[in-house]
Length: 422
Image 1 (cartoon, rainbow, N blue to C red):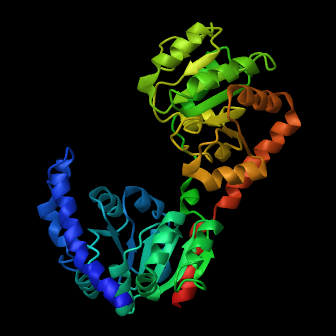
Image 2 (image 1 turned 90 degrees about the vertical axis):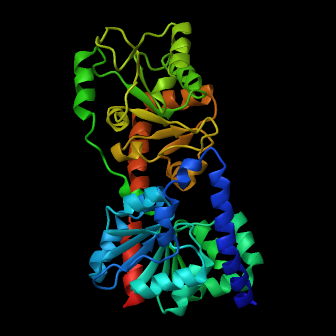
Image 3 (image 1 turned 45 degrees about the vertical axis):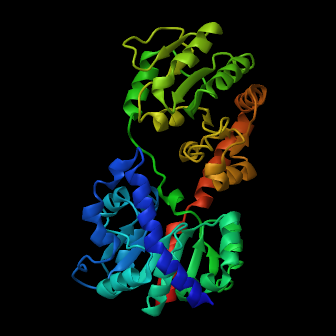
């Protein structure tokens, strides 16, 4: 039954790809089709193989996934003393992959295209990042004796249900998978529910946490601002990556917290600096003294700084006592909740942090981050932390501990793969 489903899938794959091409051709995004002619050979797996030793083949769907494996890839290359072959489904992903090694567009998930690509390149292994599950390619790798590793793997409950319905095809596709290295234990449990994977799954963490690092950008500029202003040793509250719907809430909370913490300063770092006018109107209405970062002057008695420039967020997080991470009080889904923890700073954030669910849950559990839903809640937590020095120090330590505990996925992934192949 599995082979019949795979045959049907393989026959449908080129048809579906053709329909997508027609759709884009007649859509406003038709410009994406300009390079189709030059890409077609790659899409069909017909390009010449890279010369040299057998490569470690890593497939990452698009730009974000390629960036996620940017630390893992060279470490695997070094561990196996082998060159890298990076494939991606998008041109931007291929361009990013070229920074790591030989890069190609992934062949269409049509059995003969995938099998031809594997035969030409003869990879040592196939390492698949995150959610990329291509049945024909995985089966072609299994038939060729190429071990498959799924890394930084995640799967939703909805996708799990689909693969369970296609049980025979799923079992066939996963027949060559050696290990599934999941981001979270919840992901691992879902993968264990799929045919043929029960004993091949472990949790190794999220590779993206290992990429977090301190940037020196803006540090000197921010230091100069503090020296030139009258802010001195005043406590600073930075709200980073905020959206227009959130900024009135943040401003109201800051003004309320100032009653308990006189002299508290606010640094507002919007996600989109071009949308500042509404926030400035709120500040004017409340009688708050504010200025823009781009202002040539640094007036005295300024209580709020609006940062209308890019690349300065980390510098302000490092200079703050407490931070708020935006995209969590609207429907965005949250930005980088762990960035304040790089500087041992506690993070406050709203309930909509689905884009960083694991990090947010870990911060809340360890008390290195705190959930707030309204301006009064935000003001109360901010006041509590800034008027209780032991509580603030404990939150700072917990934030750093949380980040440290989430790191290490790269080393675990490399160790697991080398052990499984040797």
